[in-house]
Image (cartoon, rainbow, N blue to C red; front, side):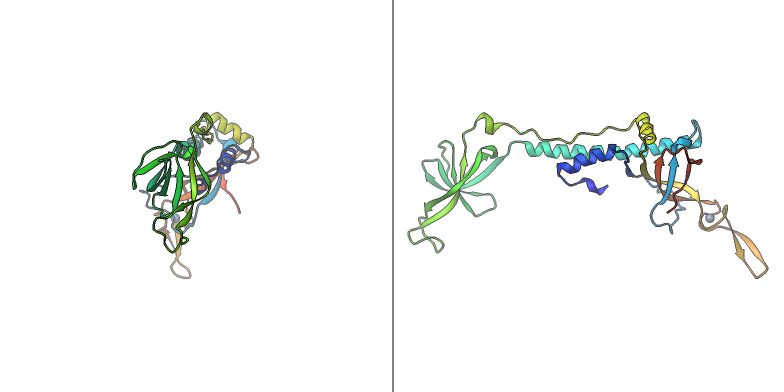
Length: 279
Ligand SMILES: [Zn+2]
């Protein structure tokens, strides 16, 4: 689910709504078994099948499978939870007070006004401090970002006029003003956090399914081999002779492990627990 990693709030709200919407479809990738040797290589993408919970009987093999699929749904929820946690951590970090560092280029007036540069920039600013503080050229002045305001344009005189300034050495720079701290400008902004989502309980899961929700999970499953019937194929030896040979695709098992995308539904009108979804 790659749609999660951008930062606007709308997305997160819609994400949370998405999970609880009437018709959620959570795509979850289950783990493929790396020890399985018989993977159907010809299958591109996952086979689509439904899994009808309304036909699952307690204690049956299908019931075991339902537990596995339910766990996969919650694994997807876990991924969303981790991503929401990361997003909230980022928002909290961004809301912390930040100090902006300026390098003194030159003292200008009364130990209050300094010509400064931001780190990595040669552009000059006239920084007006909120109180007189002594800094030497090259030293760093740190100003709380919450107190910093942009002022207008101010002029200063260059001691050694260059081609960019007027003959009299007049040059202009933008002013940055450090305000006096007060309750209003020093308050720490409380970040708007994304509401964390909960795991599904089995009861909630069933109730959502009964209300018409469906969930999609991707996992690997043992399905009938497409290349044979029950593990054997009939090989034509001559116009009259046929030979029964072991299927090389499934090794005579009649089944192969395939990537399956299960759509978990509650559909009492269907007689089967499981089956293919026809296109
Ligand atoms: Zn086969």
